[in-house]
Length: 80
Image (cartoon, rainbow, N blue to C red):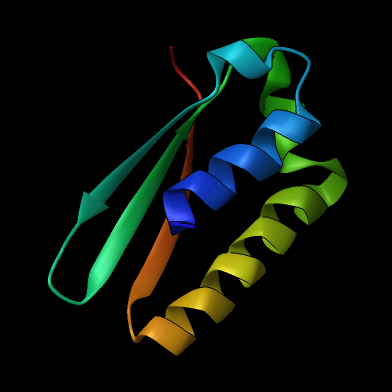
């Protein structure tokens, strides 16, 4: 399973509108940016109280990146 697919699957379980979840992957040489687009009313659910959901997602992705020797950056895009 690719990292993009993992992020998409995790986020779809958190939100009320899973059909509006879009994950884009921008690949670089040693890093990769995961852009996460969700419905405006679901942004708070993805971030979580005091950012705990977003932090947990970033920690999981960081651990995967350490094994693959790629730096992953997860960005939650709010405007849509």
